[in-house]
Image (tube, rainbow, N blue to C red; front, top):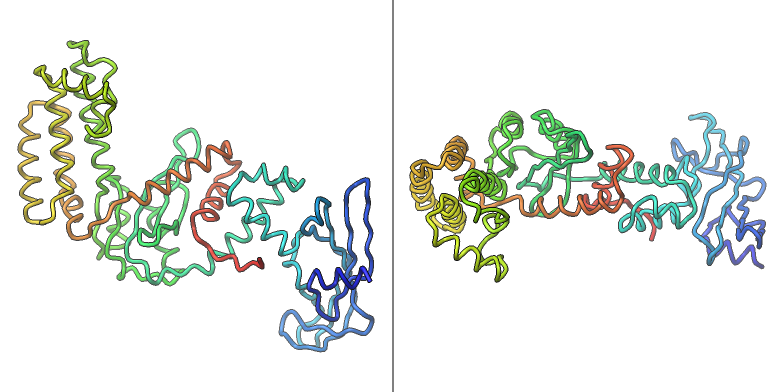
Amino acid sequence: MHEELFTLALNLQEPWKVTKIEFNKEERQLDLWIDFESGSKFECPECGEKGRSVHDTSDKIWRHLNFFQNKTYLHCRVPRVNCERCGVHQVRVPWAREQSGFTLLMDALILVMVQDMPVKRVAEIIDEHDTRIWRIIHHYVAEGRTRDDFSKISSIGIDEKSCAKGHQYITVVADLDTSRIIHVCEGRSASTVHSFYLDFLTHQGDPKQVTSICCDMSPAYIRGISDNFPETGIILDKFHVMKIVNQAVDEVRRIEQGVNCNLKRTRYIWLKNPKNLTKKQQDQLGSLKEMNLKTVRAYNIKLSLQLFWEIESKEYAEYYLKRWYFWATHSKLDPIIALAKTLKRHWQGIMNYFTYPVSNGILEALNGLIQSMKTAARGYRSIRNFVDMIYLRLGKLDFALPT
Protein backbone atom coordinates (compact mmCIF):
# COMPACT_ATOMS: atom_id res chain seq x y z
CA MET A 1 0.00 0.00 0.00
CA HIS A 2 2.76 2.44 0.97
CA GLU A 3 4.72 1.55 -2.16
CA GLU A 4 1.72 2.37 -4.34
CA LEU A 5 1.24 5.68 -2.55
CA PHE A 6 4.86 6.75 -3.13
CA THR A 7 4.67 5.55 -6.74
CA LEU A 8 1.77 7.98 -7.26
CA ALA A 9 3.50 10.74 -5.27
CA LEU A 10 6.62 10.48 -7.44
CA ASN A 11 4.42 10.42 -10.57
CA LEU A 12 6.09 7.24 -11.81
CA GLN A 13 4.77 5.67 -15.00
CA GLU A 14 5.04 2.05 -16.12
CA PRO A 15 7.28 0.14 -16.00
CA TRP A 16 8.67 2.12 -13.02
CA LYS A 17 7.28 1.64 -9.51
CA VAL A 18 8.38 1.91 -5.87
CA THR A 19 9.18 -1.57 -4.55
CA LYS A 20 10.74 -0.92 -1.15
CA ILE A 21 10.68 1.78 1.57
CA GLU A 22 13.01 2.23 4.54
CA PHE A 23 13.00 4.97 7.18
CA ASN A 24 15.93 5.53 9.55
CA LYS A 25 14.66 7.46 12.56
CA GLU A 26 18.13 8.11 14.03
CA GLU A 27 19.56 9.52 10.80
CA ARG A 28 16.20 11.11 9.83
CA GLN A 29 16.46 9.59 6.37
CA LEU A 30 13.90 8.06 4.01
CA ASP A 31 15.06 5.67 1.29
CA LEU A 32 12.86 4.62 -1.63
CA TRP A 33 13.76 1.83 -4.05
CA ILE A 34 12.46 2.11 -7.62
CA ASP A 35 12.46 -0.87 -9.94
CA PHE A 36 10.88 -2.24 -13.11
CA GLU A 37 9.17 -5.55 -13.75
CA SER A 38 11.13 -8.41 -15.26
CA GLY A 39 10.76 -8.56 -19.04
CA SER A 40 10.10 -4.79 -19.43
CA LYS A 41 11.09 -3.16 -22.70
CA PHE A 42 12.61 0.33 -22.99
CA GLU A 43 13.22 3.02 -25.58
CA CYS A 44 16.72 3.36 -26.99
CA PRO A 45 18.14 6.65 -25.65
CA GLU A 46 20.06 7.24 -28.87
CA CYS A 47 17.61 6.59 -31.74
CA GLY A 48 14.33 6.56 -29.80
CA GLU A 49 13.35 3.11 -31.04
CA LYS A 50 10.98 1.42 -28.58
CA GLY A 51 10.83 -2.18 -27.42
CA ARG A 52 14.53 -2.68 -26.71
CA SER A 53 15.50 -5.47 -24.30
CA VAL A 54 17.49 -4.96 -21.12
CA HIS A 55 21.19 -5.85 -21.44
CA ASP A 56 22.21 -5.30 -17.80
CA THR A 57 21.66 -2.84 -14.90
CA SER A 58 23.70 -0.61 -12.59
CA ASP A 59 22.67 0.74 -9.16
CA LYS A 60 22.30 4.51 -8.79
CA ILE A 61 21.20 6.89 -6.00
CA TRP A 62 19.69 10.41 -6.20
CA ARG A 63 18.96 12.98 -3.51
CA HIS A 64 15.28 13.95 -3.66
CA LEU A 65 13.20 16.66 -1.97
CA ASN A 66 12.99 16.22 1.79
CA PHE A 67 10.04 14.22 3.10
CA PHE A 68 8.93 16.70 5.76
CA GLN A 69 12.25 17.38 7.57
CA ASN A 70 13.85 14.07 6.56
CA LYS A 71 16.41 13.56 3.81
CA THR A 72 15.05 11.43 0.98
CA TYR A 73 17.02 9.27 -1.43
CA LEU A 74 15.85 7.36 -4.50
CA HIS A 75 17.59 4.08 -5.32
CA CYS A 76 17.22 2.36 -8.66
CA ARG A 77 18.86 -0.31 -10.77
CA VAL A 78 19.04 1.55 -14.06
CA PRO A 79 18.97 -0.70 -17.13
CA ARG A 80 21.13 -0.57 -20.23
CA VAL A 81 19.37 -1.61 -23.41
CA ASN A 82 20.78 -3.47 -26.39
CA CYS A 83 19.84 -1.69 -29.62
CA GLU A 84 20.64 -3.41 -32.91
CA ARG A 85 21.32 -0.04 -34.51
CA CYS A 86 23.08 1.88 -31.72
CA GLY A 87 24.61 -0.76 -29.46
CA VAL A 88 24.35 -0.88 -25.66
CA HIS A 89 23.29 2.36 -23.92
CA GLN A 90 21.88 3.30 -20.52
CA VAL A 91 18.24 4.43 -20.53
CA ARG A 92 17.29 7.90 -19.31
CA VAL A 93 15.24 7.87 -16.13
CA PRO A 94 12.37 10.42 -16.06
CA TRP A 95 13.09 11.80 -12.57
CA ALA A 96 16.73 12.92 -13.00
CA ARG A 97 19.13 14.19 -15.63
CA GLU A 98 22.03 12.09 -16.82
CA GLN A 99 25.06 11.83 -14.52
CA SER A 100 23.37 13.83 -11.76
CA GLY A 101 23.19 12.96 -8.08
CA PHE A 102 19.95 14.94 -7.62
CA THR A 103 16.44 14.50 -8.97
CA LEU A 104 15.01 17.17 -11.29
CA LEU A 105 12.74 18.47 -8.53
CA MET A 106 15.73 18.80 -6.21
CA ASP A 107 17.61 20.65 -8.95
CA ALA A 108 14.64 23.01 -9.32
CA LEU A 109 14.51 23.68 -5.57
CA ILE A 110 18.23 24.42 -5.42
CA LEU A 111 18.02 26.85 -8.37
CA VAL A 112 15.13 28.67 -6.69
CA MET A 113 17.07 28.94 -3.42
CA VAL A 114 20.31 30.25 -4.99
CA GLN A 115 18.32 33.02 -6.69
CA ASP A 116 17.98 34.68 -3.27
CA MET A 117 20.79 33.46 -1.03
CA PRO A 118 24.51 32.61 -1.24
CA VAL A 119 25.46 29.12 -2.40
CA LYS A 120 27.27 28.42 0.85
CA ARG A 121 24.10 29.12 2.83
CA VAL A 122 22.03 26.87 0.54
CA ALA A 123 24.58 24.09 0.99
CA GLU A 124 24.24 24.43 4.77
CA ILE A 125 20.44 24.30 4.64
CA ILE A 126 20.23 21.17 2.50
CA ASP A 127 23.34 19.63 4.10
CA GLU A 128 25.37 19.18 0.92
CA HIS A 129 28.84 20.32 -0.13
CA ASP A 130 28.74 23.60 -2.07
CA THR A 131 30.73 22.12 -4.98
CA ARG A 132 27.71 19.92 -5.75
CA ILE A 133 25.52 23.05 -5.82
CA TRP A 134 27.94 24.77 -8.20
CA ARG A 135 27.85 21.78 -10.57
CA ILE A 136 24.08 22.19 -10.81
CA ILE A 137 24.41 25.93 -11.43
CA HIS A 138 27.07 25.49 -14.13
CA HIS A 139 24.98 22.83 -15.89
CA TYR A 140 21.71 24.76 -16.00
CA VAL A 141 23.30 28.11 -16.85
CA ALA A 142 25.11 26.52 -19.81
CA GLU A 143 21.91 24.76 -20.88
CA GLY A 144 19.77 27.87 -20.40
CA ARG A 145 22.13 30.01 -22.46
CA THR A 146 21.85 27.61 -25.41
CA ARG A 147 18.16 28.59 -25.55
CA ASP A 148 18.89 32.34 -25.49
CA ASP A 149 17.59 34.21 -28.54
CA PHE A 150 19.16 37.60 -29.37
CA SER A 151 17.35 38.07 -32.70
CA LYS A 152 15.23 41.00 -31.44
CA ILE A 153 17.95 42.91 -29.58
CA SER A 154 18.55 46.44 -30.89
CA SER A 155 19.83 48.49 -27.93
CA ILE A 156 22.86 47.34 -25.91
CA GLY A 157 24.83 48.61 -22.93
CA ILE A 158 28.43 47.66 -22.13
CA ASP A 159 30.22 48.31 -18.85
CA GLU A 160 33.05 46.94 -16.73
CA LYS A 161 32.78 45.50 -13.24
CA SER A 162 35.47 44.71 -10.70
CA CYS A 163 35.40 41.01 -9.84
CA ALA A 164 38.39 40.61 -7.51
CA LYS A 165 41.30 42.44 -5.94
CA GLY A 166 44.32 43.25 -8.07
CA HIS A 167 42.54 45.05 -10.91
CA GLN A 168 40.63 42.03 -12.14
CA TYR A 169 37.58 43.00 -14.18
CA ILE A 170 34.74 41.48 -16.12
CA THR A 171 32.80 43.03 -19.00
CA VAL A 172 29.02 43.02 -18.60
CA VAL A 173 26.70 43.42 -21.60
CA ALA A 174 22.96 44.08 -21.20
CA ASP A 175 19.92 44.29 -23.42
CA LEU A 176 18.65 47.74 -22.45
CA ASP A 177 15.11 47.07 -23.69
CA THR A 178 14.52 44.01 -21.49
CA SER A 179 16.91 44.86 -18.61
CA ARG A 180 18.73 41.54 -18.73
CA ILE A 181 22.37 40.51 -18.82
CA ILE A 182 23.15 38.82 -22.14
CA HIS A 183 26.94 38.39 -21.97
CA VAL A 184 29.65 38.35 -19.31
CA CYS A 185 33.35 37.68 -19.92
CA GLU A 186 36.67 38.24 -18.20
CA GLY A 187 38.65 41.40 -18.99
CA ARG A 188 37.79 44.86 -20.32
CA SER A 189 39.70 45.11 -23.60
CA ALA A 190 38.57 45.36 -27.23
CA SER A 191 38.76 41.56 -27.39
CA THR A 192 35.89 41.32 -24.88
CA VAL A 193 33.65 43.14 -27.36
CA HIS A 194 34.72 40.67 -30.03
CA SER A 195 33.89 37.84 -27.61
CA PHE A 196 30.41 39.31 -27.23
CA TYR A 197 30.09 39.70 -31.01
CA LEU A 198 30.79 35.99 -31.56
CA ASP A 199 28.38 35.04 -28.78
CA PHE A 200 25.78 37.39 -30.28
CA LEU A 201 25.98 35.62 -33.64
CA THR A 202 25.74 32.21 -31.95
CA HIS A 203 22.40 33.21 -30.41
CA GLN A 204 20.80 34.39 -33.68
CA GLY A 205 21.71 38.02 -33.11
CA ASP A 206 21.86 40.35 -36.12
CA PRO A 207 24.59 43.04 -35.81
CA LYS A 208 22.83 45.14 -38.46
CA GLN A 209 19.72 45.26 -36.29
CA VAL A 210 21.63 46.79 -33.36
CA THR A 211 21.02 50.53 -33.64
CA SER A 212 22.83 51.73 -30.51
CA ILE A 213 25.50 50.60 -28.08
CA CYS A 214 26.02 52.67 -24.92
CA CYS A 215 29.38 52.55 -23.12
CA ASP A 216 31.84 54.70 -21.18
CA MET A 217 34.81 56.52 -22.69
CA SER A 218 37.05 53.45 -22.65
CA PRO A 219 39.13 53.54 -25.87
CA ALA A 220 39.18 49.72 -25.83
CA TYR A 221 35.38 49.45 -25.81
CA ILE A 222 34.98 52.14 -28.46
CA ARG A 223 37.55 50.43 -30.71
CA GLY A 224 35.93 47.04 -30.15
CA ILE A 225 32.47 48.37 -31.01
CA SER A 226 33.76 50.14 -34.13
CA ASP A 227 35.50 46.97 -35.33
CA ASN A 228 32.66 44.53 -34.66
CA PHE A 229 29.55 46.71 -35.01
CA PRO A 230 30.65 49.30 -37.60
CA GLU A 231 27.09 50.36 -38.51
CA THR A 232 25.97 50.90 -34.91
CA GLY A 233 25.75 54.27 -33.21
CA ILE A 234 28.04 54.59 -30.17
CA ILE A 235 26.50 56.59 -27.32
CA LEU A 236 28.76 57.72 -24.51
CA ASP A 237 26.87 57.16 -21.29
CA LYS A 238 25.90 60.42 -19.61
CA PHE A 239 26.51 58.97 -16.13
CA HIS A 240 30.13 58.22 -17.02
CA VAL A 241 30.53 61.66 -18.59
CA MET A 242 29.28 63.32 -15.40
CA LYS A 243 31.56 61.06 -13.38
CA ILE A 244 34.68 62.50 -15.00
CA VAL A 245 33.16 66.00 -14.70
CA ASN A 246 32.82 65.43 -10.94
CA GLN A 247 36.42 64.25 -10.83
CA ALA A 248 37.53 67.51 -12.49
CA VAL A 249 35.49 69.61 -10.03
CA ASP A 250 36.97 67.70 -7.10
CA GLU A 251 40.47 68.24 -8.47
CA VAL A 252 39.83 71.99 -8.56
CA ARG A 253 38.65 71.81 -4.94
CA ARG A 254 41.70 69.82 -3.84
CA ILE A 255 44.05 72.40 -5.38
CA GLU A 256 42.18 75.35 -3.91
CA GLN A 257 41.74 73.95 -0.40
CA GLY A 258 45.51 74.32 -0.02
CA VAL A 259 44.98 78.07 0.20
CA ASN A 260 41.41 78.13 1.55
CA CYS A 261 40.65 75.94 4.57
CA ASN A 262 36.90 76.56 4.15
CA LEU A 263 36.91 73.92 1.40
CA LYS A 264 38.15 71.12 3.62
CA ARG A 265 35.63 68.32 4.24
CA THR A 266 33.27 69.75 1.58
CA ARG A 267 33.92 67.13 -1.11
CA TYR A 268 30.43 65.62 -1.17
CA ILE A 269 28.74 69.02 -1.39
CA TRP A 270 30.24 69.55 -4.86
CA LEU A 271 29.58 65.97 -6.00
CA LYS A 272 25.86 66.03 -5.19
CA ASN A 273 23.11 67.84 -7.04
CA PRO A 274 21.68 70.82 -5.08
CA LYS A 275 18.31 69.07 -4.55
CA ASN A 276 20.07 66.10 -2.88
CA LEU A 277 21.90 68.18 -0.28
CA THR A 278 20.90 68.15 3.37
CA LYS A 279 19.77 71.40 5.01
CA LYS A 280 23.17 71.78 6.65
CA GLN A 281 24.97 71.19 3.34
CA GLN A 282 22.70 73.67 1.54
CA ASP A 283 23.53 76.36 4.13
CA GLN A 284 27.24 75.58 3.81
CA LEU A 285 27.05 75.71 0.00
CA GLY A 286 25.25 79.07 0.20
CA SER A 287 28.01 80.58 2.32
CA LEU A 288 30.73 79.16 0.03
CA LYS A 289 29.01 80.63 -3.03
CA GLU A 290 29.40 84.10 -1.52
CA MET A 291 33.17 83.70 -1.75
CA ASN A 292 35.04 84.20 -5.00
CA LEU A 293 36.07 80.54 -5.27
CA LYS A 294 37.40 78.68 -8.28
CA THR A 295 35.57 75.60 -7.01
CA VAL A 296 32.26 77.47 -7.24
CA ARG A 297 32.99 78.33 -10.89
CA ALA A 298 33.86 74.70 -11.63
CA TYR A 299 30.65 73.61 -9.86
CA ASN A 300 28.54 75.98 -11.98
CA ILE A 301 30.18 74.63 -15.15
CA LYS A 302 29.24 71.12 -14.02
CA LEU A 303 25.61 72.08 -13.33
CA SER A 304 25.29 73.74 -16.74
CA LEU A 305 26.50 70.57 -18.49
CA GLN A 306 23.86 68.51 -16.66
CA LEU A 307 21.17 70.58 -18.40
CA PHE A 308 22.57 69.51 -21.77
CA TRP A 309 20.82 66.09 -21.62
CA GLU A 310 17.45 67.74 -20.93
CA ILE A 311 17.41 69.57 -24.26
CA GLU A 312 14.93 68.16 -26.79
CA SER A 313 16.31 69.60 -30.04
CA LYS A 314 19.51 68.04 -31.41
CA GLU A 315 20.44 71.27 -33.22
CA TYR A 316 20.05 73.39 -30.10
CA ALA A 317 21.85 70.74 -28.02
CA GLU A 318 24.91 71.00 -30.28
CA TYR A 319 24.80 74.79 -30.09
CA TYR A 320 24.52 74.56 -26.28
CA LEU A 321 27.46 72.13 -26.07
CA LYS A 322 29.61 74.43 -28.19
CA ARG A 323 28.82 77.36 -25.90
CA TRP A 324 29.59 75.21 -22.85
CA TYR A 325 32.88 74.09 -24.40
CA PHE A 326 33.90 77.73 -24.98
CA TRP A 327 33.05 78.61 -21.37
CA ALA A 328 34.94 75.58 -19.98
CA THR A 329 38.07 76.12 -22.10
CA HIS A 330 38.18 79.81 -21.09
CA SER A 331 37.59 79.14 -17.39
CA LYS A 332 41.31 79.34 -16.51
CA LEU A 333 40.81 76.16 -14.47
CA ASP A 334 43.28 73.55 -15.71
CA PRO A 335 41.27 70.44 -14.66
CA ILE A 336 38.14 71.86 -16.32
CA ILE A 337 40.03 72.76 -19.50
CA ALA A 338 41.48 69.24 -19.68
CA LEU A 339 38.00 67.80 -19.13
CA ALA A 340 36.51 69.94 -21.93
CA LYS A 341 39.20 68.77 -24.36
CA THR A 342 38.50 65.16 -23.41
CA LEU A 343 34.81 65.65 -24.20
CA LYS A 344 35.76 67.34 -27.48
CA ARG A 345 37.53 64.13 -28.55
CA HIS A 346 34.30 62.22 -27.89
CA TRP A 347 31.98 64.85 -29.33
CA GLN A 348 30.09 62.55 -31.72
CA GLY A 349 29.53 59.89 -29.07
CA ILE A 350 28.00 62.50 -26.77
CA MET A 351 25.82 64.00 -29.51
CA ASN A 352 24.60 60.53 -30.55
CA TYR A 353 22.41 60.62 -27.44
CA PHE A 354 19.97 62.85 -29.33
CA THR A 355 19.66 60.30 -32.12
CA TYR A 356 19.45 57.30 -29.78
CA PRO A 357 18.30 58.60 -26.36
CA VAL A 358 19.63 55.74 -24.23
CA SER A 359 21.92 55.56 -21.23
CA ASN A 360 23.50 52.85 -19.12
CA GLY A 361 21.23 53.66 -16.19
CA ILE A 362 19.68 50.19 -16.45
CA LEU A 363 23.12 48.60 -16.60
CA GLU A 364 24.27 50.65 -13.60
CA ALA A 365 21.27 49.32 -11.66
CA LEU A 366 22.16 45.76 -12.72
CA ASN A 367 25.76 46.38 -11.65
CA GLY A 368 24.42 47.46 -8.27
CA LEU A 369 22.64 44.12 -7.96
CA ILE A 370 25.85 42.33 -8.99
CA GLN A 371 27.75 44.19 -6.26
CA SER A 372 25.11 43.28 -3.65
CA MET A 373 25.33 39.67 -4.78
CA LYS A 374 29.13 39.69 -4.48
CA THR A 375 29.01 41.33 -1.04
CA ALA A 376 26.46 38.81 0.29
CA ALA A 377 28.57 35.90 -0.95
CA ARG A 378 31.78 37.50 0.40
CA GLY A 379 33.45 36.86 -2.92
CA TYR A 380 33.58 33.87 -5.25
CA ARG A 381 36.06 31.04 -5.50
CA SER A 382 36.50 31.54 -9.23
CA ILE A 383 35.53 33.97 -11.97
CA ARG A 384 33.45 31.20 -13.56
CA ASN A 385 31.35 30.95 -10.40
CA PHE A 386 30.87 34.73 -10.37
CA VAL A 387 29.93 34.86 -14.06
CA ASP A 388 27.46 31.98 -13.86
CA MET A 389 25.77 33.49 -10.80
CA ILE A 390 25.28 36.73 -12.76
CA TYR A 391 23.67 34.78 -15.59
CA LEU A 392 21.55 32.81 -13.13
CA ARG A 393 20.12 35.83 -11.33
CA LEU A 394 20.12 38.54 -14.00
CA GLY A 395 20.14 36.69 -17.33
CA LYS A 396 16.44 35.75 -17.30
CA LEU A 397 17.32 32.29 -18.56
CA ASP A 398 14.82 29.53 -19.30
CA PHE A 399 15.90 26.47 -17.30
CA ALA A 400 12.96 24.27 -18.44
CA LEU A 401 12.71 22.61 -15.03
CA PRO A 402 9.64 21.02 -13.41
CA THR A 403 7.88 23.13 -10.79
